[in-house]
Image: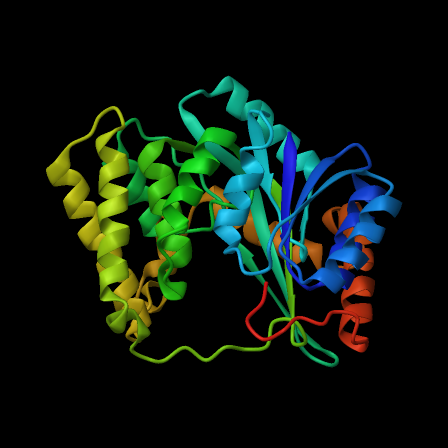
Length: 337
């Protein structure tokens, strides 16, 4: 199982994540897809050379788009299973190894993963945390899979996937991007192809900070100005569903219309979770979601079993974020990643 890490002009972040793997997952096999400027590439070469974990460092021109960079990287090896990482994301490989084994048992599934916790440092001394709950998406036909996924979406890319599927995903992303629909678009096209297996444990800790990731205000009507991209997402999901067993064109069109309509309503100021009764029924009121919420609470409760299990991991990540935000170790030009 290969872990692919894109990076661009964030040498301190790359150093932190390499140190994380060396400490917590020293048997991991990493591939760094580096799109940094020449001077940062030199720093990254030094980090890779000194890493206490297996790392292959692949260098690309700084102006090569990230998804093109990742596609080229994926074509350099033949491993069946891939984890798409980042230089500021920290996977829990004990959970993702379980996900890999489930994919072996379930050839009809295309990806699998655990719950995702986002740690966002928004200012000196200020941070927030949020949870993305993964759920089983195991229907036999693509319309039902997209219906279940769209009722409570989650990021499907933080986990393990078959390499062929990741290549197909990146082929879509090399020509499509709409920030406000990104996770929905990736998830719909994923489950259009096959099932998603949820592991009810912590799978990924994703981080951001005010130095490397300053808030980007999105124009309020961006989702309308990007209507062509929304339609392109619709068509891509439909085309992928058409290649899957159990395809029914009318059902798929109805589901896509409903799911995209709910997302548009949320962006316009009427998110689904504000609807009266949303929290009192499925998909929110289910054992999977409640157990995930309890795990999230326990993760930040001193003395809990979950906190104890992940205490060293959390302390390491917090320390590295503090180092990154307290220095000018990362020198990312505006817009570069």
